[in-house]
Each structure stands twice: as structure tokens, then as C-alpha cells.
Amino acid sequence: MIRNGLHVAHRYLLAYWGLLLFALMCLVWSATAAVLRHLLSREQGRVLGRLVTSYGFRCYLWTLELTGVGRFDLRELDALRDAGPLIIAPNHPSLLDAVIVLSRLPDVACVMKADLIDNPLFGPSARLACYIRNDSFLGAPKQAVESLRTGSQLLLFPEGTRTTRWPVNRLKGGAALVAKRAGVPIQTVLIETNTPFLSKRCPLYRVPPARLHFRVRLGRRFLPKDNLMETLAELEAYYASELASRNGLDDIAEVIAQPQNPG
Image (cartoon, rainbow, N blue to C red; front, side, top):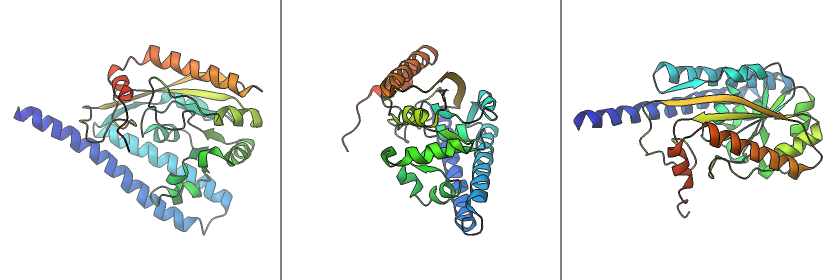
């Protein structure tokens, strides 16, 4: 029993050390980015901000692997680096999903929730990198289209938030709308993990696994269509089919199926 208790304590220590490290890295870079915004042009800040964010996230994930916190198989994302303008559309099982994608792709405009860009921990670095405020995606499509037309790629989670309905939430219309307006394809990305830890309905006090496993696969690429509802229906059916058949993660499905606590 003592050995089991020590093992659980060790798992907690590693997991929360990883979260603390992430917060410290974001704090240091955001403080630096707040100064750089006044010293660099918008274009210089955008390039530097995205490069540093990508490299910093890659170093963070590498540190998690080195210390045994997690294992990350992200090699398939490398094929997108020189693929030109795309809407990169992953499913969203955990808090680490944006970190995972941005760690491999150095020129991506990320669509973020407004409260994250207003957060002092993430906001200054996000503004330096010219990430796009979501604000329920009102007004954001124009910025997203402009970013794609400059040659950048766009990271947009079609579910709008972390998955709460197994295997994928009802999709929002942002990806289909921007694809139509910009005339660029939607590249689906399938993120698979072995744990509900860091998912929307899993409390942080739940015992984390001995090791986090994340694997990324490139999915089908969808060409834009005039009919947005048709695009959404095809995307949602594709995610549901691929994730339900490949993941087989019963513990995650069980957590997601649990009703939310009121408030």
C-alpha cells in the first residue's frame, strides 16, 4: 500500500511539475513579448513571435519526454510545413492540443478564445504573433482570410472547445466559412491520447496516468464548398468515424459522457 501511495504521489508530482513549467515558460516569454511589441514592426513581431512560440513549445514537449511525463508522436505534422496555406483543423481532446500542433509548425496563425488573449499569461505573446481573437468568431473570419492570403496557415479547432461529446462535439461553422472565403482546403488532424487527463470534464485532481501518450495523424483534406452545412456534415461524420474506430479509449469516453456539474 505504501509503494502504491508513493507511485501515485510520483505521478502527481510529474504531471503538476509539467503544468508549472509550462506556466513559467509562458510567463517569461509573455513578459519579453510585451516589450518587443514596442520595439519591432508588426511583421517582425509576427515572424519572431511565431518562431519563438513554436520552438518554445517543442522544447517544452521534449522536456516532458525527457522527464518521463509524456510521449509525443507528432512526426506526421512535419509534412504540413511547406504545404502552403491551409486551415489546420484538429479535434480537441485536451489542453495540450494547440501546444502539440504549434510545436511543429512555425508559421501558423492560431484562432484563440478572447479570454486567453486577454490573459496576462498568454496575451502579450499571442498579440506579438498576431494570433486571432475568437470572440465567438464574430469579425474574426476577415482576419483569418487575410492571414491565409499572406501565405500563413491557420490553426482552428472546429469543435470550438475541448471535446465534451464522444467522440467529437457538434462542429462550429468557422472552418467551413473561412475555407469558402479564402478558397483554401481544410486539413483535418486527428489527435489521439491514452488519457482523459487535461480534458474538459476531467478534474485536475484526478490521478494522472503513469505517462501521457499523444499521437497525431494527418486526416483527409477537404476542399471548400459553397454549401457550408454540407461541409460541416462531412467533417463531423469524418471525425466521428476516424476517432471512434481508431482510438478505442473507453476511459476517455466514460469521462466525456459524465454530466457536467452545475455551475
